Image (cartoon, rainbow, N blue to C red; front, top):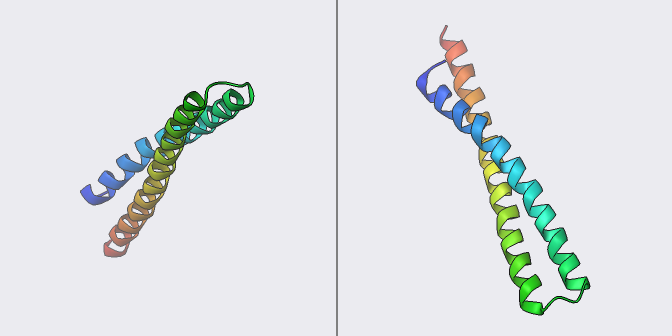
Length: 85
């Protein structure tokens, strides 16, 4: 593996699991915010919590999509290396 492929592989290796964890945490927090709303909590509590939950969820999506792009770039760099051999 060349340095370019190694860089993309390492980014994929760490970003994909982190993205999946944040997606799950965000969905869980969104559900909690919905329960806060229906349990009669003050509006600012569930709106604030829901907003933070959406930020967590979107951060997870962004990390996971970026990880998928790095995986694609890793495979492209690896294929280029195989062509040179």
